[in-house]
Amino acid sequence: MSAPAAAAPIRVLVCDDQDLVRTGLVTIIDAQPDLRVVGEAADGQAAIRLVAQEHPDVVVMDIRMPRLDGIEATRRIAGPAVSDPAKVLILTTFNLDALVFDALRAGAGGFLLKDARPAELVEAIRTIAAGESLLSPSVTRRLIGRFAERVRPTAAEHSALDVLTAREREVLVLISDGLSNAEIAHALVISHETVKTYVSRILAKLGLRDRVQAVVLAHRLGVANPA
Image (cartoon, rainbow, N blue to C red):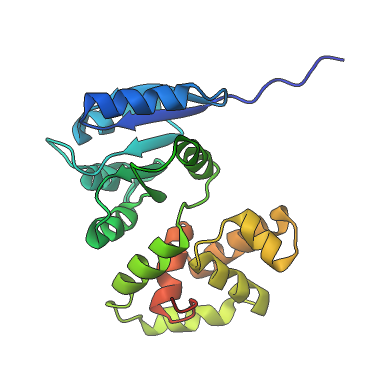
């Protein structure tokens, strides 16, 4: 009996205007057996072009770049108007509230500072590739909560929660805390697959595209745990 075929590596596009930083990222990523860098970009315009050419599974995107910054590039490849959005991990030295929120609102699936350990970077890429958001509790509560609460929720958004079951609302609260599917499964003593089913149902019932939108909505409606 033949051995099962190995899974294809996660294809990664690295976008950073600093050659040294970009080279370091490529070295870290390519050292992993399940990751492969398929392109490098030094500005947002090049990133958009390479996404169209290479169709990467994950785009590691710097914010501050020439010609076109990472937030606008993210909006053009992963924003609400994009029919086939890319999965974007924002990587930056700038831990500024507005930039974090703008990046997530533009369509990024997560946010990581450049002083993160190599192991954190590769795990973040795997998380984003798997379709999960990378939202640490500190970022979720301090930043998303602060900005989301500035926008008054609509009556439709308030009533939308009525379609959720009690367990689904419980899962939504844990999502808003920045917990991964594995962490939610551990907290509720249920299987990882069951959590994935709950998350899919929540997004479908609320008409949301991803977990980031679910986090923002939870904070706007006041159902998220307080900081």
